[in-house]
Image (cartoon, rainbow, N blue to C red; front, side, top):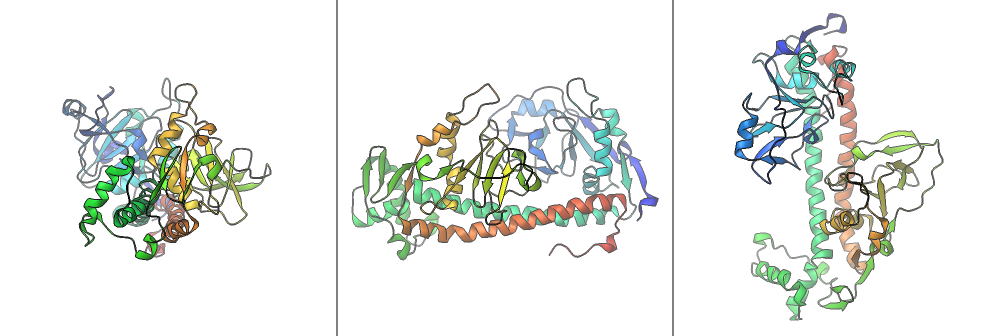
Length: 457
């Protein structure tokens, strides 16, 4: 390998099929056949956590030119241009709009072509052709077919394997983090929304359960009948259960555990805390696209000179203020700053900060709670497509404030999980940088395979 011996081939010479999508809007349904949308394809990944669907008739009408199959590559023609993904095994789907299906020939590595399409060598060809559309930049099919792809006889499979190994480790870290995040969220809901430990204690003591909480009490009764821990019932350690009261008391806004407080979010935590950062100071920066749509980990963090935007500190929580970002779930936990350091980001961030009574992990889980998010969405005002959350909504959403001992127990459960989230996110950031460094060097031939370190355990 070596850049002086670079050999290229046209994309249409490497594919047995290059098929444009139907130029029509799918019939959207609540379930059925998956329709790939450009919003599902980002940074080389296919994310179907918010999948879109069509019915059988719609599906059949969209596969007349070709039926997507495992190993096919989808590339977006516009909005945005040049994003790619590989169709995984077991996925039955059809193309949406502004997409092209590529099916590599049998003697061409699908995974190598996938990586080559993301290399600067090909990305430059995509950007060089910007402005060819009538209303938005797009890739025309003749231009797409003529893209030049670097060829490395006998090496392409191994190049793809190295890049896949790094990418797979990043994916594994995300899956572990997703599990940790779900565990923390489930504990938050059980303790502070459903009040399960209080209901369990009240049932054990024979104390009355308020009518509003009876449905949940019946569920807890059914689970308690199975003391072996099957079917989802896993009793808390006695030392933890003893921290919770065994009765409820009525407040103006409903029933709460006895001895607990009830406060508006704006009183319980700090919303948009004042933070100082001098203009021109180079600091960590997070833009809106870096906020995850699920979980808390922010992997894409850069540095730039501060010129304006929301300012935040370590352990703050960032919540998207604007539509459709809030509806899409964009929320993140600031675990990448050192003590006393300040970062900044989009002006469309709401910054939430915990305190001694309500820990940052509690606030992070609150920011992901469905009821809290729905309340924020219902406060949005503004023109269609540019609606924003009103800060006043935090005056009218109330949260239960547990005793200090209960909060400490919650932190004892969740802190290790959040610490592991940080470790995995940091590793993923490093691996992403490594992958992005190796990709152009491997595809161009600047770096040889035998020069690669053993970077992935």
